[in-house]
Amino acid sequence: MFSTMQDAPLSIARILEQGSGPHGASAQVITWTGEGSRRRAYADVGRRAAQLAHALRGLGVTGDQRVGTFMWNNAEHLEAYLAVPSMGAVLHTLNIRLFPEQLVYVANHAEDEVVLVDATLLPLFGKLLPELKTVRHVIVSGGDKAALEAPKGVEVHGYEELLAGQPVEFDWPELDERSAAAMCYTSGTTANPKGVVYSHRSIYLHSMQVCMTDGMALSQADRALAVVPMFHAMSWGLPYAAFMVGASIVMPDRFLQPEPLVKMTAAERPTMAAAVPTIWQGVLQHLAADPHDVSSLREVVVGGAACPPSLMKTFEEKYGIPVLHAWGMTETSPLGSVARPPAGVTGEQLWKYRASQGRPPAGVQARLVGDDDQVLPWDGESVGELEVRGPWITASYYGDDDPEKFHDGWLRTGDVGHISPDGFVQLTDRAKDVIKSGGEWISSVDLENKVMGHPAVAEAMVIGVPDEKWSERPLVAVVLRDGQQVDAAELRDFLAGSVAKWQLPEYWTFIPEAPKTSVGKFDKKRLRKQHADGELDVTRLG
Ligand code: ADP
Image (cartoon, rainbow, N blue to C red; front, top):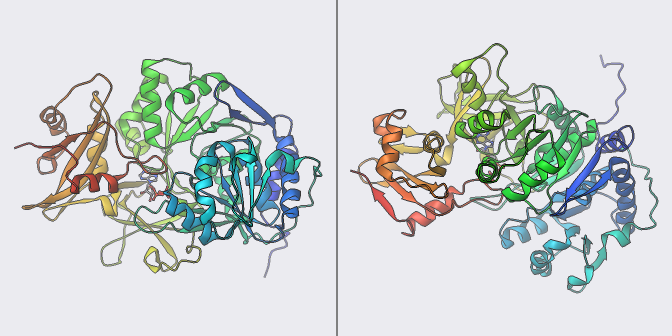
């Protein structure tokens, strides 16, 4: 028997109406300009999203054409986030930091027909445009469209001119909730990037999860600082979730360095903020040298890579700001698990829960799979690859058959770890980063976290390097804090108290800067190459 419930599709248009209607006057998008901010009420965002949709219809976007964005986090990007899916087209957020050949690949692969570009990114975009085979219209936001030289067959428009005079309401079509709303390509560190296509339904359900108390607990009382780029896994769902509940959102635009981030926090007083650990490391270092009032933050969300416990403790002990650790992937929308400890847990046990990747919510099923494909128990000890499934987990890649990544309807995450009986995931590594030393496994993340616990160390990366006797041994690459000195032997002594003797690294190198990926994570592939090319000055301790 079927239910008696109405079959109202879950859609971005409902999120748009909720944010721009009941919350239209109270909630705002605040975009940092370098010196101060510009503000726009959600009611205006809603009106402008309608205007954008009319303009796009005028350019021939009548179905599920892909509309790319090549933009920072700002008000206009938010308008595109809302307008494009609501009108039935597909938003494709282009990761501006990919290599040019990868960007060309993804825009051609997705068959983007229109691209919205921030004027500040025109020098970069202009170089790609001649290679983009399907693009017919480019819309330039925040600057002079004449700065872009268009190849034959491509029309260039100014964002504001295009919106001017368009009706401020749009009759949003009723769409199948399973239809494509937005797409995002993984950063593709090993092969070509792969496209994940989110549906209206998946985005709607994921947004609700972001707002749940045991999720990021986003509410209308919040002002969220979205540091994580809108081209990186949909800014972890913050723009849609904020619009859904009427939370205001602070957008840093291109000002993603520690200094402006600290400045905008002091000036705009966000209540929560989300970014990868390397960004927060930079912010903490800056704050130590140049104190600012960041007390408005009720919580800081860290994800995208393992959060070093030292980072959590500094935030908490020095600034009184709790850190919420979360795990996810582009493929998981991205929220896959959140580390909110169970009630009543205290002391070291509490830190253990908080430093874990957390508990998957009801919308995400998790299991561990061992070497010969057997499913392992949640006993807090058995180590295997994490597999997940659920309504906001991708079941395939767009136009790219990759059976390796899927297993009986589950997504293979490539992450290795264990799960406790109460459902907390503790990742030890990415499968490809685990160091296999004499038949035993060493967690690169565990070593990194421990080295970063030394007060002189700003950042530490650990990779496996070939070793005649053990097949692989850990190499630690250390970035020192400004003005600090420490040598390899001292760091190894520091580790000796907390790391098994056979895991203690003998290979060390000091580097001025850690190589990072397009989304700001440690780029171990590049470090491995630097090592293979003999570019690192490695000390071997006896
Ligand atoms: P990329 O693979 O290019 O980094 P994603 O942003 O989709 O693209 O990254 C997903 C991966 O990031 C996960 O599979 C995992 O390895 C890592 N990751 C994300 N969050 C965490 C976390 N909290 N702890 C450890 N690893 C994490």
